[in-house]
Length: 551
Image (cartoon, rainbow, N blue to C red; front, top):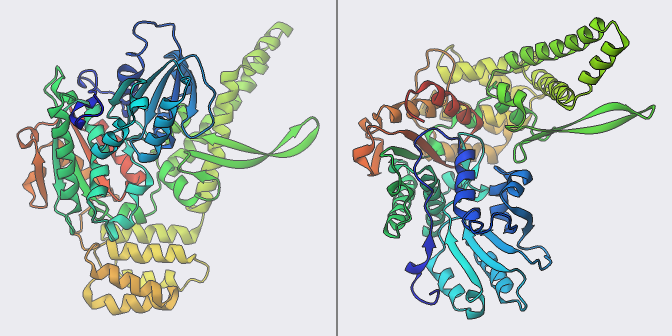
């Protein structure tokens, strides 16, 4: 079968539509287990599988599944495709990105004699190109050992319950400033994005911004092409759904709103990975590392404490989208309450038996874990606070930024000059303020020479010339939004317009697919060429709480 036309490839749709809310983590796990793992074990629930992944697929799985999740579903072990592996008397489940390197290693595995595994079931994260399929099908030894060969349509990385992304190759801001005008770029990106819509299981509507270079339209049309391909092969999850709900996808690029990339956001998660990046914070791992002095065996030693910031951390989940001053106050109060509880338990224990019970309670893993987490977050909050609000100079920068983006106050160019002349400020921060001034919409052509002179005097001629070229490109020239209170990312306004079916009232947007369903979407999604920011992740959570009947 694999030696004939690529139309014989098999693809799967998700098991039914999304009738009620499920987080992206839940949706990913449902597709992963229901459509890949469980069908293989349907005739033998006691069997065990070995899961083989390449680098890309491993990163997708690691974001949503723990080892105990995999083991509970019958996966005995997980191994990398490119690592030395021992033959096992188990059924093998391959989850791979459809790239040339992965297919070549798969071919070698399938051609080994005797076979490395009992059976071979292969699933791809997204669309397998026709040429790669034909090349693979030419190896009869490899094909004869296959038990399954499937496009799973699960090619996106989950960041949290509301946010997803692809790898850094597709997220780089330079792709907006100097876009790759290659069909392969949009083809690959469109294939990934189509898997996201397939996982939702809702009738997709695709809308795009009319941006400066047409990249949003190019990507939208590629997504539509992939969706049509799924429908032609009966692999469209929304066609199998019992629900008639729809999802409206809006494709924009980073130029839709530069401010979230440049402004200091004072909410916990965004601030932590902004001001403490390189000083213990690692966004790629969602972690923070800091050193503490502990007494071990009567000696004081400096040890590193690794804090994983994820859904398992209830304190992180509670505070991550709050402003830092509220987090600082709340974590401090929680830590004090925990300490008072310890004292109260000890003081009420009048007998030896009661004291023993109190000591036992305080030594419970849950109690110690919560206390340790509170100490970790108290330390992180203190460092964030000291790096920003505790500094009078930084408070002035924060005030300037808010005045700049909301249009309050006067004398912005003069205030900017004061910061640029400050020898104690890092060049990166000065450049950030210059870009923010440009992106705010306050700069005018009459001030161009003044800005160029300021940039050249404090950041050098090369930087100044690049700033002028960026300004001349028109990427920063967007209409100013009016804010009654604090600034919010523009995506919040777009989400509300999408939910209300009012997006196409503006000539800035065009619908490529599903215009009939755009007025009543059950869910809305925005994809940003150039990558999303943490303030935008926050407003996605905010919008989900406030919008009635729309996810």
